[in-house]
Image (cartoon, rainbow, N blue to C red; front, side, top):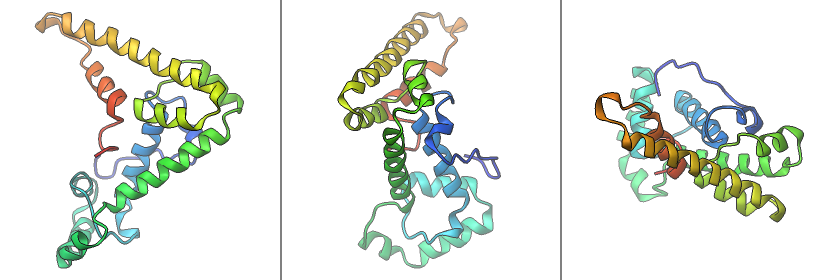
Amino acid sequence: MRTHRQLTVYGSIFQALNKPGCPFCCFLKEFQAARLQNAPDVEIRNLCNFHMWGLAAVQNAPVAADVFLKLVDEPLQAIQGDARCDICKEVSDEEDLRIREFVSCIDRDDVVRWLKGDAVLCISHGMRLRRQVPFVLTAHIDAILENCRQQLTYELQQLRSELEPHRLGWGALGRAAEFLVSQRGLRA
């Protein structure tokens, strides 16, 4: 997250299907970044550690100072009420919406092509989809997860066996972390 970073604001999960990695993670990362950059537009009463630091990183100083002043002025309100981070709630709600959107259009040509092609999912989104798609499609989700697992296993074994001065492929560590726990900042 960087101040004034140009965001790709997706209106639908289908716009993220052909992006690298899990499309749900990709969509939600952009949603989360846009939310942090638009923080003054909505009342914020509570932020988790990640989103507090994220707001400080992406916002210009006066805007971040305004949000932080509100939080500093009433710190007990944040910890006595619903202590869950406002942005975490919004990301979770958006995630639910995008899973439902995807499942409701599972028969679309672009979705079918994606499922049968080089689809990538993290375990978290794969398991959520698996629980919501019709039973006949669970095998597709399982195959996507297994393909991702096999590719990562190969890349990680290669990385482990490379000699230090020639070691390439550090991106495999990031892809493995994403596969296991979603993209950074989406899960606490």
